[in-house]
Length: 95
View 1 (cartoon, rainbow, N blue to C red):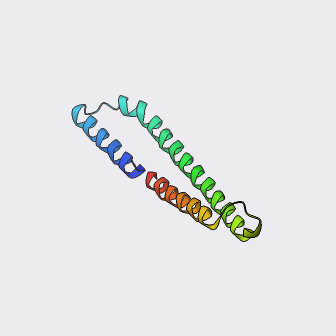
View 2 (view 1 turned 60 degrees about the vertical axis):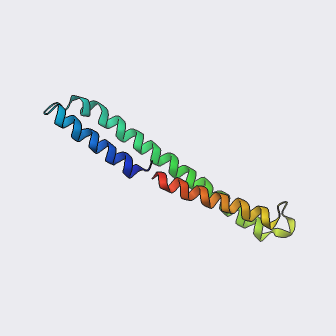
View 3 (view 1 turned 180 degrees about the vertical axis):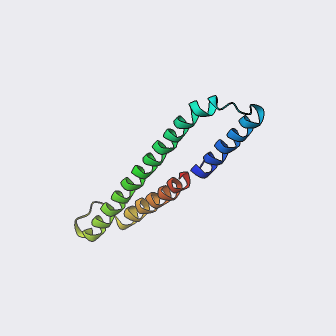
């Protein structure tokens, strides 16, 4: 589930809580900071994964540049590249 969906669910929760317990902000005051902290950490984890994937793709490009000494075939390199690109797309959906 991407972050926009999580934020939307959070807003629905806040609305429903306000409907059922008007003027009672105790629950929101205690949980909202934790929710924001969790979202921030999730963004950081996804960003770190994306940076790592980018480093891997750069390494694959370096292998291609030195194909004469590479231990991997072009097919293996392309397969790895495609897997990393697919993983990047999946990670971006989490944001």
